[in-house]
Image (cartoon, rainbow, N blue to C red; front, side, top):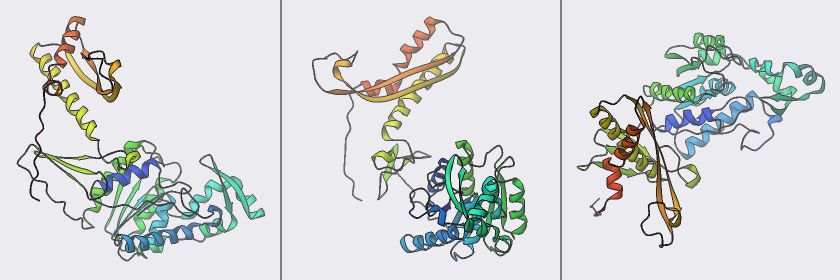
Length: 374
């Protein structure tokens, strides 16, 4: 289960990246919105830290009933604090991860400083958090002030991974030190160097997800994937649900998928992405071989490709433009860095058309299909 940060929602880019890294390792993840946020019903003004903890427990109960017992709980910021509180009540939980979490939930109160007096006097106030207005009631503040996680952390009795940025200006790094010190082993710490609190740089959240996936492998059992085997060059296998497809080429394991917009999960390139990859890689390799053979001063070769469908009438190279309908078109742009003449550049363009994959696409192709016994 992934618990998001205060006033965030489950679709935050950082949360998606971390969840994706886990799912790619075969770990199913439930991302959900706390009451009154994102796609969840209810009024945010009536929620508090305790209700967030209850939301987590309800999510764990749902997971157990619908999919299986929860073994890993991850929480970001205040969601991390709520996870520390809730994990002790989820008997199946074996590992807990906090990301930029406060040791003292009341730490979040500093976001309400300018409105604290109004909340105390009127019982509520509209507070701007992250550029969005939220109604905060007095009960929210009082509930935060009543929280003390030290005993929960001490008695957590689960493997704990604390992740925090040393330059986090929202929740200081000292919070990570307090959480780590309060917990018993096994416990680990990973510094999210140079990351901001929301991990707005995608590289930081992807790194976090990869680290979590690697670390948790010691504490939870993951079913072994069926080993794809074939006597051919490539074998692919599509899952029972959706379009996520495993690919094996010799010793290399890959994934293929479709975008979310067409019913996929976007966990891998599309089949056409792989087609363009084959052409682009072959083009770049062929040009490198040619440049090396001719001892040309070429440092870098990039090939940019796009696939689309165009009307036959718009095709510049089609021999028979009188036919109607559309054709497939691949646009290939080649970027060559090096000290070469214009004549050499034009020659490189000609060589690109001679790459084996290019010639295969333009040649006569026969695909033979046979059905095998399962």
